[in-house]
Length: 349
Image 1 (cartoon, rainbow, N blue to C red):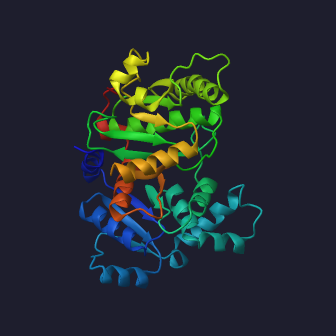
Image 2: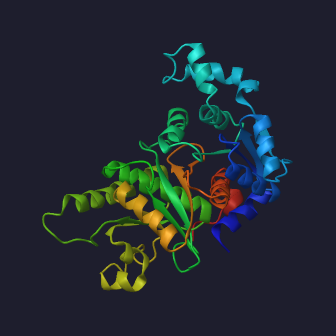
Image 3: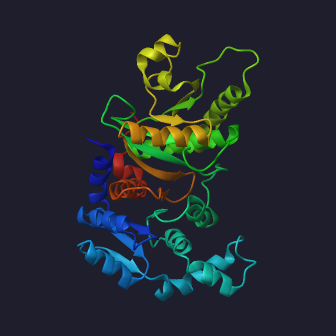
């Protein structure tokens, strides 16, 4: 069974509320209808009520089980205003400026998430990544012991011999252009944390490079950075109490194919040939590879799911289809389910 279907089964028993700032977008409406129809929880659409209902009618979509919220008419606006005034980033602005900020749907949605009025947030369908990410990074705090937020893409593949029954977690594919070794360590650990949460399996993290366990002296700087990041990620995982296996630097074939891992001398590694989390050395690699796999191989990709934050958030592509948005919504909603209710108390396998 595909990861998305497994998580949907869990959500039917533990439904969640997902807020969509771009509530009138046709793809959001279609994804919200599917989310509600499958009894996964309550989609919350932000926007003009009349416009949303008109578009839903044109698409022949029912609106039962879906909540529509107009920020400018919401009682929560006056509740959120003093809260945002107290945040250090916004304390220097006057009340009118912060009220105008809250009327921007991405800010309003982030405040809904932080105050428990929504369990997860999905944005980015109609805005550039920077515009969608800015309110999130300004309002949603980082996890303890994490200095950098990043993102991951979940590939749900037909080949169940790859990853966790066909599920592969790729990062960072959307946020940090040139991560340093500390940022790579954060990316590795926070992605592994979500992968373990969603699958119940032990995260096996491959820190990717163009070389596998290079023996050059001196090491090329890009390879040396990855190698140092592996050591820092292991330390960070211990501090955060996250179980994982991590190895690097590895080429992607050595990370995914057992025979190649054996030939390249990493067959005895707990990661070589059996990785389920792939960490790219920079955004060029991550973004290009993730898009190419989806287009050329026809793989289903869900995300970007933001990592390192205290709340479940996704920033989707403007080119996303309704099914991609639904899958991404299922992932972030499942993140909001306590691990005990997802896979019990058994240790990662």
